[in-house]
Length: 96
Picture 1 (tube, one colour):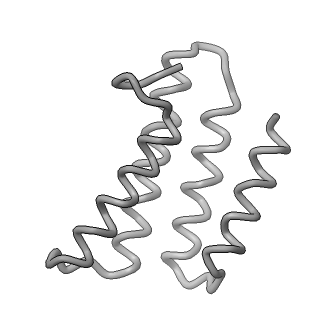
Picture 2 (tube, one colour; picture 1 turned 90 degrees about the vertical axis):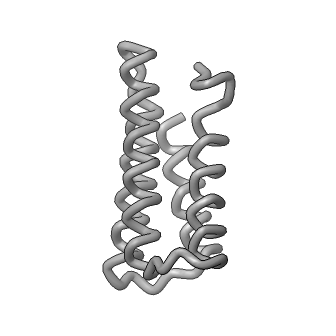
């Protein structure tokens, strides 16, 4: 399933990089705001994929997990990027 000719995970990753670039080069975003923006993007892509697939649950579940983790980090969860990646990898494997 593709959105704008791209895999949903690629769109989420691209949006995350754009948000980080914006924060690094002049847009005044706190880490909380970046986390919320990433969560919204992940959730929106998950919903779009679920809508397009009609009955698939894997993408919205992963999007929800990614959004939840981003929000948790935004509200004070002090996990490194490596820890977050491991948790999200586990979620992907568990869903598969």
